[in-house]
Image (cartoon, rainbow, N blue to C red):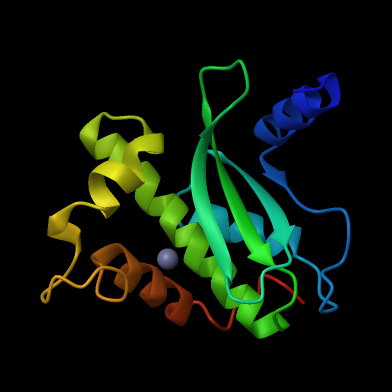
Length: 157
Ligand SMILES: [Zn+2]
C-alpha cells in the first residue's frame, strides 16, 4: 500500500460523510444534507463513505470496514453512477438500511459490525420461508421496505 493509499483510507474513515468529488456519469449528485438527515433518521452512528462504481448490473453494495490503523468502524457504500437518479436514490436508501441493520445487530449481539453479513445476514434464520437466499432474506425485505417508505425523499438529484 502506498502512503497515498494509506492517507486515502484514513480520510474516508474520519469523515462523517465522505462523498465522491464528481457528478455521477448519469448526471446527478448525492445530496449531502439529505443523506445526513437520512443517517440520523435511521440512527446510523458510524461514518459513511460513498463511492461510485461503473456497474451496470449491480445497483449498490454495503460493507462495514475497520478504519486503517484504528480501532473503529465505518460504512462503505458503493453506488452505480450509471443508473437514473430515482433508482440511485432508492439504492442509497436500501444500502443505508443495511448500515442501520449492521449497527443494530452489533449493539444487540456485542459483536463487531464487520461480522454482520457472515453471522446474521447469512444465517439460515434470516433466509425466509422457502429457504431462498436473496429475495426472501429478512434483511433484504427490510431494506426494500425502508427504501419504499422513503422514496419521496430523494438522496440524489
Ligand atoms: Zn440489499
